[in-house]
Length: 317
Image (cartoon, rainbow, N blue to C red; front, top):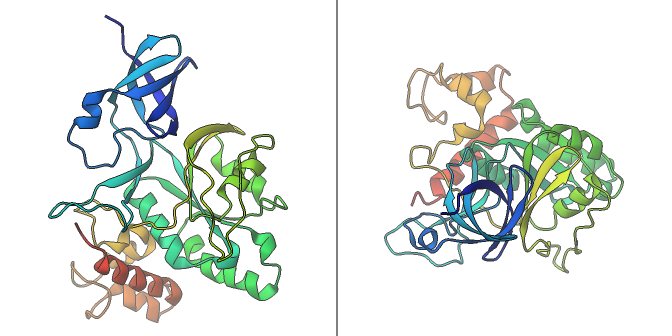
């Protein structure tokens, strides 16, 4: 009987996978049928970054027998246009597994906290440390535009999230970003057209990943059609297809809890008079008191309220 070998999924292209063993050996793999047919809540049984057990079949070929437990997991709900199952929770799409850091790349000319918060929710619910990267800073040379960027990212800086302003074209912030990634398995996520692939090329000249311009409506065209792990400057980096829509994918116990993204507000919330305080209208609210005395930034509090409303509107099933 052929012995099973442990490895990591380093490339996903449709139903085909590439698995790398601990000794550097690589196999082209397919998934064992029982994994496809088994009961699951995700759209696919295996994703990029998964640690798996494989059975080698011949030189360079193997079958994925089992997916090992994931340390972290970046997921999203299936897009709204996708197929729904009546009476059942829609499956989630697993973006990447076992990553240490997720770099959320957003474009400076269209930077919005609403977009950032949705990607932060993906990172938070998956247990992954986020880094916010505002890219294409070369496209906002005007002082007013740069001031707007600063106003958007300031609440995240105050909450302890690393923020890097970059330009793949001018290499602004590229070395700073590389230093944050070194020694980690990292996933790049963000809306299409944010410049994730261009950043990867800037981090590792010669990588030469394919890029495309935004379309006539200013939206990014999906360029990355596969998920892969690249060795870039001492970091292993996952490049995933661009996402235009990210829906909340929380565990049932976490659903509706915006404090998952606001550790500073969560610390204040513990001092409120009522344990189930919503921090919106109750008396004795330590969060509102902190805003009134200047201990908590008012813009930060408004972001909390906005996300709370968004979570209340998001379907729990």
